[in-house]
Image 1 (cartoon, rainbow, N blue to C red):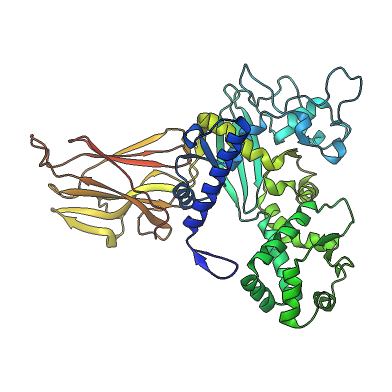
Image 2: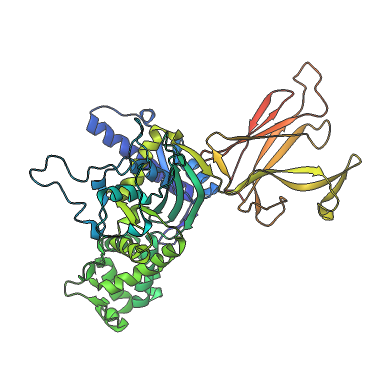
Length: 522
């Protein structure tokens, strides 16, 4: 359930479904208007991007909200697009302005048209430049040559041509920050994920939260709660006004930023407090926060920086790398760019595309054209099934011992198909064969479990949760021949895609079922 600013509750799935349907219909109408041709839903391959750190439950939620689409992970989409860029399409570092200058009159060839990444054959892939040695201490020297500029774009770690090119992608979005490590194959340009995504809820929404805290400090929590409830549209207008000022904030200018308070805010405050907004701001007593003569909340650069600082600190604490490539909408913020360069500039270079907020969107289009470009991913979770194994004294705990048909069994064993951070290629399949616990049983139910830990041994362990089940009908009334009493059931998990597929096959009858994996139910 999602709570609106007026306190009303509504199902989150319904909200997302309506929002996505609006975007789809709007996009189809725009395409139809611009092409003078009626574009239908089936004419389009739809791709939706999600943070790499999202868990399976969140991906399932998005899948249910919008059918018939591809799910792309945002850092992967960024990587796919970035390899197509040219040098002039990057945000220059302050010491590199001379190197990244525009074309001059009379210059026969445009400057800075070097590709961010070289091409091998006809594939637009990232490959190391051969025969060039670069000393690490020269990375941050302001006079570095054009060759070095090309080589270290995307924060490339130069390895042997057999290994491919490795780099870090930091995707700073509205809600989350994704930190991923990728390798680009030298020969074909396919992506390999070298380490599972890390990060957290450290997006630009954190700055909004700090602004709301500031408003509470100035005007009181009782007023802010009442204003959200009584004037929800006014509160949205207020946050939109702050959003524009947040995007304009820069560490390179000392100009104050004026946030326009909507009339509904000023009017409701007067009725609620029987006093003017200006009086509350003056009473707050912060020299960096004033009421302007134009009737706006004026924030000096230091006040705006304080709103950014908690989120910036969380991002910096999450970064433990040598090389960085910065993408995502929040990466537009010059305050974020400046802070990361100030914190890590002596250790690494941070490269940012000019159209940083559109990088993931454009990469998603590239992904939609070829979803097989990502060949290797790291499993976010440990996945497996619950089974009975022969009891081994000294290995299995006594409380797991059960007796069936004269045999000692260990119950609740977590039989793992893949473990956390294990590499899984696109289409990788793990196949296990099982036998029903009792001969002649009519149905066989195989429960599917997951865990964030790789060392979980039993499905009853603290970090293990059931996420789905496979139910096979083992009755053989419809078959004219006798079937074996001990049936073989093959359980198969297919990995490597953004979502996992699970099936079970009754070998004797050829009957196959798919798992009803449900990460949303508890």
